[in-house]
Length: 255
Image (cartoon, rainbow, N blue to C red; front, top):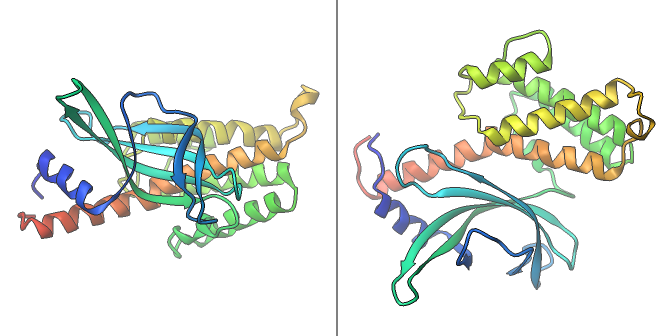
């Protein structure tokens, strides 16, 4: 497949995806005016955090930015994946950064956790469902341990990581191509490490009494970190492949 021209990609995104906001610096406000897809209200969405990912280390391809947001009205939370396109405004003598929404993933009261996991990975689906069930019923330690188990199933059974322990399997994934041939980012490795370490605290009682209990916030954070892994492994590659194939077809490029 031929590499897509930067200008063609820029034009394609601007013509086909929703511009959600424009910013004039790399700093993002903690609150941005927007529209909640769930309660259908115009609100100032609360931005909890964001992650940047550069798909290619060379060239001038745009960044992908994932926002974790919450609606102050209905309290629903989502991950919003965006493509960031820069444009120079000569009149103002500065760059503006346009954020186009590719899709958003709700994190509560949703079946997202298993909806985007292929049916053939039944063990992973069952484990994630059990983790979510424990989370919804206040079993925060059990939920955390089950998300750690889900991570190991993802690493060993699906990505083909080698090693007797989850630690060694995650280290193997840093240095070797996985069975799905998915490009694992630093965000994936960082989140996996956190899930493993927190899950280990649940499975093995800590001498520190303050670490022997798990709060709802602890379990929800592990849940959200795992959602990002599912997004990176199953959702984003499929979405990006479809985008490239559609653009290639529209522009009559050679494969």
